[in-house]
Amino acid sequence: MTATNTTAKLTPHLRLRGVVLFGLAYMAPLIVLGTYGIVADNTSGTVPTAYLLATVAMLFTAASYGRMASVYPVAGSAYTYVRKSIDSRVGFLVGWAVLLDYFFLPMVIWLIGAAYMSAEFPAVPSWVWVLAFIVLTTVLNVLGIRVAVTANFLLMAFQLLVILFFVILSLRQVGAGGHSLFSTIPFYHNGSSFSGISAGAALAAYAFLGFDAVTTLTEETFEPRKTIPRAILLTALLGGVLFVILSYATQLVHPGSTFHDTSSAAFEIATDIGGDFFAAVFLAGLMVAQFASGIAAQAGASRLMFAMGRDGVLPKRLFAYLQPKFETPVFGIVLIGLVGLGALALDVTTSTSFINFGAFTAFTFVNISVIALWLRERGSVLRNLVFPVIGAAVDIWLLVHLDGVAVTLGLIWLALGVCYLAYLTRGFRRPPPEVSFEE
Image (cartoon, rainbow, N blue to C red; front, top):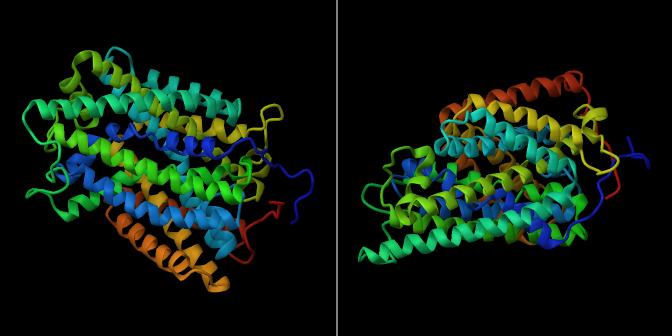
């Protein structure tokens, strides 16, 4: 059906800097250290290579997201791009897969934060930290995207300072030990393997779940056809550079992958390079990073559900509702906060792989969407065919290198999506509901 004037629509508030900031906050560069021990264990101590590989892979996919965002400047991200360029049913299933990513990512972020806080303050129950993170981020997101972006600007500034000091202290300790600051060992050594690095890259790609999230802010951005594609590439590139530099310095100061606890490995390294004081500062920075990322993740997920609710794919009365005063999709925001309570029953490794299944599925189909668009409209072969083919191939490659349990859970999630789609379409006899709205 066609939208009327009463169709819910988000209001533009953001420009390029705000959108890039949102993406970087979502990616939370310092979170690289939050999962550092896990990636180091998978790669046998070649974490920078995993992030370098993930960066190259994500840049190809980021180019495809930028292309689709310029053609379809509306909220909904991969869900919208696939349903408009390929098929509404495929679009629904991609949106369903993305929900796995967006819906549970805030939970993973809060889980990482709670794990570090519990390690430092064992007397405080983990559920207290989880609940505190959920309540604070939910309130900020309900108050509106401008409030969230302002908060993220302050949080990112502190986070970048912590990263700077972490790198400086790491390199100082390496130099003081008489070792070279330039070495290939953090990238590859006799004990590393391509399969291990591939598995690490699949986990490392978790850190990039932010460049695609900026597309969910399309309707809240001025000149989205120009701003969003630029923001996507800048977010992926800047994030990748930070990830590689930070992981290189960390791997250089702590060669190998042996830690007392892989879940809080970076805290151990921070104590080694800067003593208890810097360890406390680092912990504060990590909490700031996960808090900023949690704000952005919850905002992005609620915008995706808003788009699906407006289309009638999710219950419209609930998910397409905007709170009148703050113009925010309050039901989706609160629901994601409630889902975050599941952090109490999961571990970081499984939950990270779990959400990456949805991310790689979406990334693959966005690349395919660009190819489908090229088949209809032609244009640059390099940008609209070669790049997305490479992007799709790499995304599929990373997908199959995920944890086996995560792939199984992801396939079960997709099977549930097929069942729900069959219900919505009366046994696939009708197309999924869709609303046409002004862009």
